[in-house]
Image (cartoon, rainbow, N blue to C red; front, top):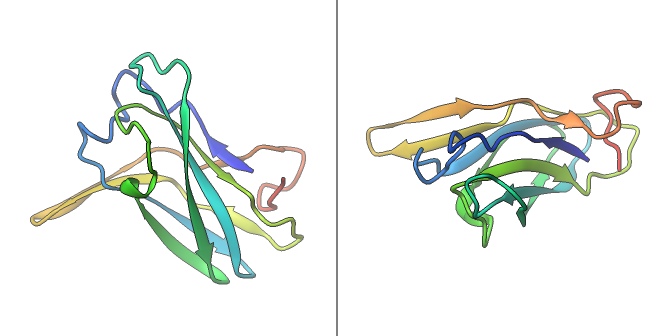
Length: 133
Protein backbone atom coordinates (compact mmCIF):
# COMPACT_ATOMS: atom_id res chain seq x y z
CA UNK A 1 0.00 0.00 0.00
CA UNK A 2 0.93 3.68 -0.37
CA UNK A 3 0.21 6.25 2.30
CA UNK A 4 0.59 9.78 3.61
CA UNK A 5 0.60 10.53 7.34
CA UNK A 6 1.23 13.45 9.64
CA UNK A 7 -1.66 15.43 8.25
CA UNK A 8 -3.33 16.31 11.57
CA UNK A 9 -1.68 19.50 12.75
CA UNK A 10 -3.69 21.71 15.11
CA UNK A 11 -6.69 22.04 12.81
CA UNK A 12 -4.61 22.69 9.69
CA UNK A 13 -6.27 19.82 7.84
CA UNK A 14 -9.79 20.52 9.02
CA UNK A 15 -12.06 19.87 6.05
CA UNK A 16 -14.98 21.54 7.84
CA UNK A 17 -13.22 24.83 8.63
CA UNK A 18 -11.42 24.91 5.27
CA UNK A 19 -14.64 24.00 3.44
CA UNK A 20 -12.95 21.18 1.56
CA UNK A 21 -15.31 19.02 -0.46
CA UNK A 22 -13.00 16.81 -2.50
CA UNK A 23 -9.74 14.90 -2.21
CA UNK A 24 -7.86 14.86 -5.53
CA UNK A 25 -4.81 13.03 -6.85
CA UNK A 26 -3.59 11.50 -10.08
CA UNK A 27 -2.85 7.85 -10.80
CA UNK A 28 -0.62 6.66 -13.63
CA UNK A 29 -0.72 2.99 -14.58
CA UNK A 30 -0.24 0.89 -17.70
CA UNK A 31 -3.28 -1.32 -16.95
CA UNK A 32 -6.73 -0.65 -15.53
CA UNK A 33 -6.77 -1.07 -11.72
CA UNK A 34 -9.15 -0.93 -8.78
CA UNK A 35 -8.01 -0.03 -5.26
CA UNK A 36 -9.26 1.38 -1.97
CA UNK A 37 -8.63 4.79 -0.43
CA UNK A 38 -8.71 4.77 3.37
CA UNK A 39 -9.24 8.09 5.14
CA UNK A 40 -8.12 7.96 8.79
CA UNK A 41 -9.74 10.66 10.92
CA UNK A 42 -10.06 11.54 14.59
CA UNK A 43 -12.79 13.14 16.66
CA UNK A 44 -10.11 14.44 19.05
CA UNK A 45 -8.21 17.65 18.21
CA UNK A 46 -4.96 16.06 19.44
CA UNK A 47 -5.49 13.35 16.80
CA UNK A 48 -5.10 10.49 19.25
CA UNK A 49 -6.65 7.34 17.87
CA UNK A 50 -8.46 7.24 14.57
CA UNK A 51 -11.45 5.89 12.70
CA UNK A 52 -11.16 4.53 9.17
CA UNK A 53 -13.54 5.24 6.31
CA UNK A 54 -13.15 3.75 2.84
CA UNK A 55 -13.90 4.53 -0.81
CA UNK A 56 -13.31 2.29 -3.83
CA UNK A 57 -11.57 3.71 -6.91
CA UNK A 58 -11.25 2.26 -10.41
CA UNK A 59 -9.04 3.84 -13.06
CA UNK A 60 -8.28 2.94 -16.68
CA UNK A 61 -4.78 2.60 -18.10
CA UNK A 62 -2.96 5.89 -18.51
CA UNK A 63 -2.94 8.93 -16.26
CA UNK A 64 -6.21 9.66 -14.52
CA UNK A 65 -7.21 12.58 -12.31
CA UNK A 66 -9.24 11.20 -9.40
CA UNK A 67 -11.63 13.46 -7.48
CA UNK A 68 -13.30 11.79 -4.49
CA UNK A 69 -16.05 13.64 -2.65
CA UNK A 70 -15.20 13.70 1.05
CA UNK A 71 -18.86 12.84 1.65
CA UNK A 72 -18.13 9.40 0.16
CA UNK A 73 -16.12 8.56 3.31
CA UNK A 74 -19.09 7.54 5.46
CA UNK A 75 -18.58 8.16 9.18
CA UNK A 76 -15.37 10.18 8.77
CA UNK A 77 -14.75 13.03 11.22
CA UNK A 78 -13.59 15.57 8.69
CA UNK A 79 -12.42 18.03 11.34
CA UNK A 80 -9.22 16.02 11.97
CA UNK A 81 -7.79 14.20 8.95
CA UNK A 82 -4.81 12.11 10.06
CA UNK A 83 -3.78 9.84 7.16
CA UNK A 84 -4.67 8.78 3.66
CA UNK A 85 -3.86 5.20 2.65
CA UNK A 86 -4.05 3.74 -0.86
CA UNK A 87 -4.56 0.02 -0.34
CA UNK A 88 -5.71 -3.20 -1.97
CA UNK A 89 -3.56 -2.35 -4.97
CA UNK A 90 -3.16 -5.22 -7.41
CA UNK A 91 0.04 -7.24 -7.18
CA UNK A 92 1.59 -6.47 -10.53
CA UNK A 93 4.85 -5.86 -12.30
CA UNK A 94 3.21 -2.95 -14.12
CA UNK A 95 4.21 0.46 -12.77
CA UNK A 96 1.70 2.40 -10.66
CA UNK A 97 2.40 5.92 -9.43
CA UNK A 98 0.43 8.54 -7.54
CA UNK A 99 0.59 12.31 -7.86
CA UNK A 100 0.32 14.85 -5.06
CA UNK A 101 -2.77 14.77 -2.87
CA UNK A 102 -4.88 17.92 -2.84
CA UNK A 103 -7.98 18.97 -0.96
CA UNK A 104 -10.32 21.17 -2.97
CA UNK A 105 -13.11 23.46 -1.93
CA UNK A 106 -15.58 24.63 -4.50
CA UNK A 107 -18.28 27.24 -4.69
CA UNK A 108 -20.36 29.07 -7.23
CA UNK A 109 -17.65 31.74 -7.46
CA UNK A 110 -14.71 29.40 -8.04
CA UNK A 111 -12.60 26.91 -6.17
CA UNK A 112 -9.29 26.68 -4.37
CA UNK A 113 -6.89 23.80 -3.87
CA UNK A 114 -4.58 22.93 -0.97
CA UNK A 115 -1.86 20.49 -1.99
CA UNK A 116 -0.48 18.52 0.94
CA UNK A 117 2.00 15.79 -0.03
CA UNK A 118 2.78 13.05 -2.51
CA UNK A 119 2.07 9.56 -1.12
CA UNK A 120 4.93 7.15 -0.62
CA UNK A 121 5.09 3.35 -0.85
CA UNK A 122 4.99 1.38 2.38
CA UNK A 123 7.83 -0.91 1.26
CA UNK A 124 10.75 1.33 0.29
CA UNK A 125 12.81 -1.70 -0.78
CA UNK A 126 10.85 -1.85 -4.03
CA UNK A 127 10.88 0.66 -6.85
CA UNK A 128 8.74 3.65 -5.95
CA UNK A 129 6.59 3.12 -9.02
CA UNK A 130 5.69 -0.47 -8.16
CA UNK A 131 2.65 -1.30 -6.06
CA UNK A 132 3.29 -3.49 -3.05
CA UNK A 133 0.94 -5.35 -0.77
